[in-house]
Image (cartoon, rainbow, N blue to C red):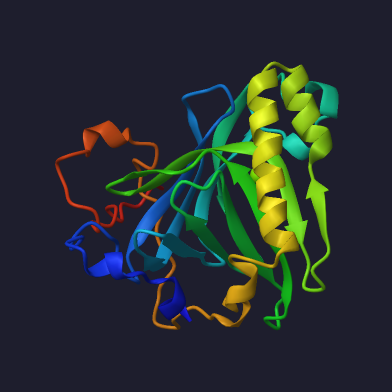
Length: 244
Ligand SMILES: [Mg+2]
């Protein structure tokens, strides 16, 4: 099904620039109003090219996600203090079913597919975020808190609007930035309501290659991309160091 998303640019001298299906890369997010990386998901490349990056987050993958600095869960913290307390990254296993993440270059969102255990599509999830910056070992972004869930019957709903407001009140997202994020959400809604990319593209029928392993979280998962820029070509998977 990727045939319709692969453009002629793929043969346009981009050899070595794009990752190859099966490569392992890191999908990372910085905190809001922060330079600190606090989410890191080792993923397997499904497709990569000038227009689209598609990756698979396999069940059982050791990831990094934020918790409050005292170790408690963010979701349990009352909304009015949830974005005001310091956070710390923690290693954590991705459990349940895997997630397919699709991102077009330059879009201020990526679209994730969630399935039930029997591979029935549960929903798409439009994750509003900074357009991803590519580096040799993966992509970096900032999550914009506000999201949109899209269901197989083509209905949709905003998600986490309360957190979006709380993050603004805590000063992590400024007024102008919040307006830009809302506008990005409305642009995504035009795709949803027109049933455009990627909803029309049958990604719900995609399945991971059974030969793929579960990618390892490298010990230096939070390394600065500047350390690698220019030193290596894209396509080099991160080192599979053990972290325990
Ligand atoms: Mg989000």
